[in-house]
Image 1 (spheres, rainbow, N blue to C red):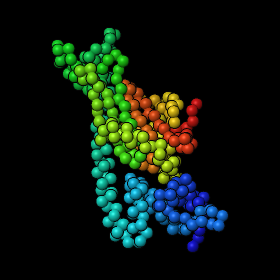
Image 2 (cartoon, rainbow, N blue to C red):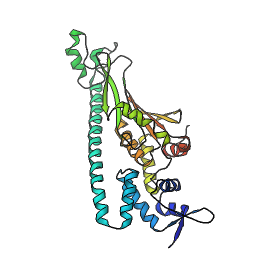
Image 3 (cartoon, one colour):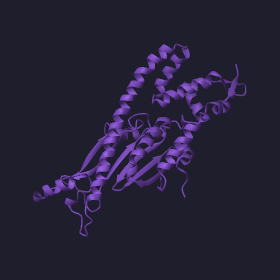
Length: 303
């Protein structure tokens, strides 16, 4: 049987050597060792990596993939099918739920922009009747102005919404986010797009411990990089501890959220946080120290 060194397997499969080492440590891939300690792989490793990549593309967790690899290796196609079907069905239900949340959020943003554009340009100061944050808020505020209250308004300084996604294979890896914005009776109003902000914060603490390895390679990696570069084109960049901050037009939020969710499926060491600030979207991306090079590959360097 032909043996492949790790560099040869990486070239044949399109999977980076760092990811091959990670797969070995996770028990998904085995390697023999030469007397000098070099890893050597059989030809079957190429097919195994293709199966792992396909499973990752479907959003399966590494633990699930490890179970399925054993079934796949046994050679009974019907058993692989039986193991895959319930897992794919579960991922489909999750994806449809996330798509519905994102579609509703996108519609809300478009409605807010349309409402904002329809408001007259006034020379005076903003008041609760302006209703900048929510479609229909202006009319609701005018209807309740006699009582001095506003159904949904904003101060002259505006308001913001923020969301976070933590790379740990949990809620944030699935692309969920928590957002807050607007006001009611002078108090913030939370708009929750996930199981909850506290859960997202707990998961946000896990990303620094995630292995610095990416399951994308070859054409997939280039395509993802191109999509990111297009999505953040023209952004204002600011360096932050462990990463960077990009300021973009708020109408790109849906595309950025979709890319961040996809990125965490293959590169769980990235941490993405989205902050909505009126007409702007602030995207913060962080990575562990040894993931800095991959962060630069994806978003470029400062300056």
